[in-house]
Image 1 (tube, rainbow, N blue to C red):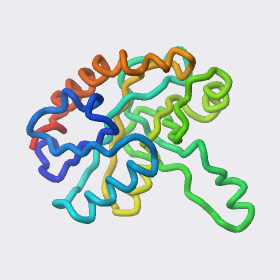
Image 2 (image 1 turned 45 degrees about the vertical axis):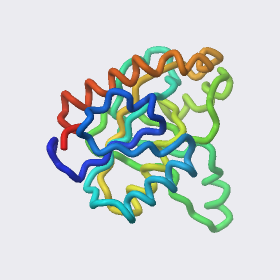
Image 3 (image 1 turned 90 degrees about the vertical axis):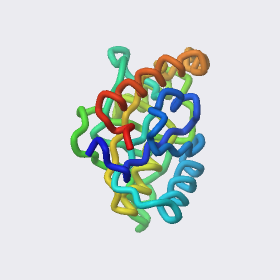
Length: 187
């Protein structure tokens, strides 16, 4: 559905969305799970109809061999104690499967991952890490809206991640090119 007017491109920051085609419907949702969920929920309830959300942005690689653009097949929340809460009788969904992805797994949480120990723990269950993907997946699932994640590796979730601002423009260009090539940025 490349020319579907009901496609909403969602990005945490304007800098990550810098090269989104000008005619695309774009929502800047803000950084972090709560802000992203609140902003997207507001748009889905008050804005024009949406049939598909495409969440674009940067991600930290949890393994040294990851680089470039990824279309995750699953996203999970890494900073919620779902196993403990489920054991206490409060079952939680903390993972969403996304059809048509490339078999990578994205872990989302409100922690900016910039140390090797944290990265190595996350690498046991995921390939990439960001701060909004799971929240966007939760909202899309609640509203019955299709979701595609597109993430470009900007760092390796170690001390070098603190140079994230320097990597954003190249990642944003890759995302804009991908949107143009797939037609998802067209209205």
